[in-house]
Image 1 (cartoon, rainbow, N blue to C red):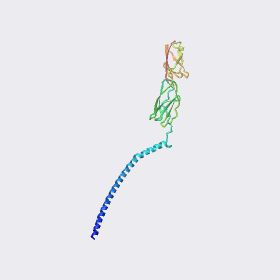
Image 2: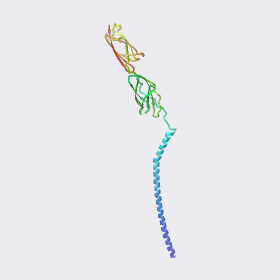
Image 3: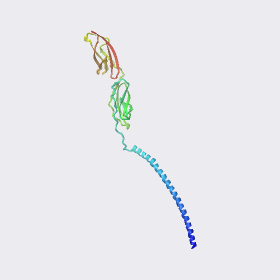
Image 4: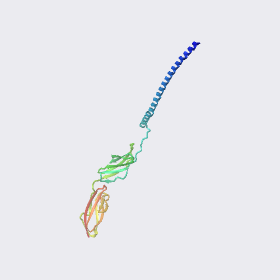
Length: 254
């Protein structure tokens, strides 16, 4: 009976030691698993964050870039811009070698100037649609057209045709009556008839009186003479603004 109890006690101590060893091993394995789990979760979170904040945005941008480039359903601007409008109608004639043009067009569009059927120059309208350009002219008639091109490459209709004549020559002046130094007598001849020729539709000032030449350049006017010497000053101005001046003297006697 005594031996049985002794063996039982030894067995219990041995079994207890074995259970303790197993328990320590389990704890060690459990700690190892917990550490591995922590590392897996940590690296998983890091990878997820990288995927969310770096990879996904780049993939989205790449996707839409491909769609924008290849998709046949991308909406394009096919509407022509407004026709450029000049602030004032260009002069019909000028003596200047250049002509300042100002106006309005579609904002940020190109304004193209076509001179004598060839593209001469272009300017860019500002954000308010305003534009300004100094157009160089050739001697003689210059036919001008203007149109606009927007940022999408659409062209507007052309403006109407403007013809600007560059004339830098002074107008001629021919006096038929009276002759310089003429002597006019008798009261009935006191109202002097002045006749001559110059450029078509030119303006003529005879002293302080305005006379217009007709389409052939002919002009006629009357002048009431004072007794004695009368000075007659002629100033002719053509459509281009060129001037010719001339002065004669006639004498009237009663």
